[in-house]
Each structure stands twice: as structure tokens, then as C-alpha cells.
Image (cartoon, rainbow, N blue to C red; front, top):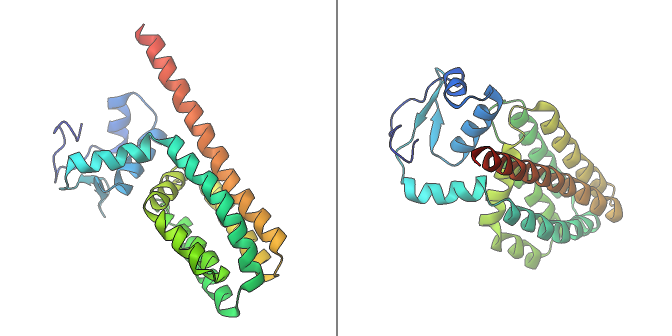
Length: 228
């Protein structure tokens, strides 16, 4: 509707309950959709409640939003790369970390804690910051540059993944606990445990996205069958 101009830049979107009525769905998918639109910059929440359409290039923005909302397979491919790289990065971090590195990890964890207490926050920037502290603790500039090289897709993938947790405190708390497990293993200088904790963390993200992809595919088939 935004792309078609029914809602223009500066327009305030209808309330959640009204959108639920318009699309014939519960408020949960409406909140999820609004979170994704806000994360992509198409809308902005206001202090008084509600969302306002932002004055941006719809053509360019829709290309980015398409990646975040549809191209789950590409996100899953990136997760495979992350599992290979970051499990070993965590192992190196456990061997090479300094006390200053641990302090930076703790600061990043505090940022994640604050984010999960804010219901509408996605927390992707805080999540990326934590993983960056692990990369830094590996003290390998080549690995660090490798992560920078995929940073654009990395950013989109993390944002896509964590958007699914918005409004679900239990899931967000689980992600925090997974990060803590990684930090604790690094702090103990236990390379094997650090690698395993990273694999568990990223593996859980992969399972969640695979489940979401399969559900989306099922919904598409159901809609196609209904039209037939």
C-alpha cells in the first residue's frame, strides 16, 4: 500500500487493531510487519503511538526490504559461512583474549540486555557489536577483514533474524544467554567450549529461520490452492 501510494510520506498508518481488521489477521503478524518496515526505514514509530511513513526512495527501499523479507535462503547461506568462520574465531579468542577484550564483551552484553528490555528494539546493532568483540579478541586482522568484507549482508541477515524475536521476551533472553555462554567459555580460555557455544548459537538461529522459511512456503502453497 505504501509502494502504491495509498500511504504517502508523512501519513500516519492506522492503529494496529485497524490494520488487523483491514488484513483479516491477528495483531501479532501486524506487529511483526511493522517492525520489519521500521527496521528497513520505511516507517518510524512516534512517541504518541502509531507509525508515520518516511520520505525515502521507495524503489531502492523495496529492493532492500525484499531481501530482508523474502530471500531467506541467502540468509541461511550466510549463516553457514558464519558457523564455519565464527566457531573457529571463538576458539582463537579463547586462546588469545586479553582482559580488555573481556571488558568489551561485557559492555556489549550490557547493550544487549538493555535492548531486550525495550520491546520494540530489534537489537541487531548490539548483537553485531558483541560478535565483533569476539572477532577482535581473536587478534587476527585477516579474519577481521574477512568479516568486514561480508558486513553488508551480515548486517541485513542479523537484522532479519532478530526481527523475528521482537515482542517475544523469552526468545530474546535465550539469545542473550547464548551470548553469555560464548563469553564465559572465552573467559575460561576453553577453546573447544567457545567453538561449541558459537555453533549452538548460530545453529539455533538457522533452525529458527528454516522453520520460518518452511512456514512461509506452506502459506504460499495454501494461498495458491485457495485461489485454484
